[in-house]
Length: 134
Image (cartoon, rainbow, N blue to C red):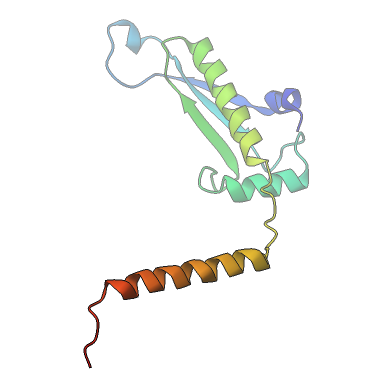
């Protein structure tokens, strides 16, 4: 994954931020909408695209577009930087493949230790009971 090539494929749109504000809020578009077309990306290989489609399934539209919003600050430029950071981190984290688990058997010594421990516990609990009078 080459981040400079991916950044060229991003599309940005400035929107009016929601929430309370003064007179200035109605004139300024500080909210940023970042859109990335995963299906038609040239920066990602087919394997990477397939992996991202699976892992980001809940965040993608039907056309395989990833849309992120950022309206944390009052500065459009800062919101754009935050959106890019968030996007790159999201892609980087989701491209990591988990290691395959190799099933292992317990060792003979651990099986023996477990059996002995169970035996000790059984004896301990048996000694708590009232003795049987015959």
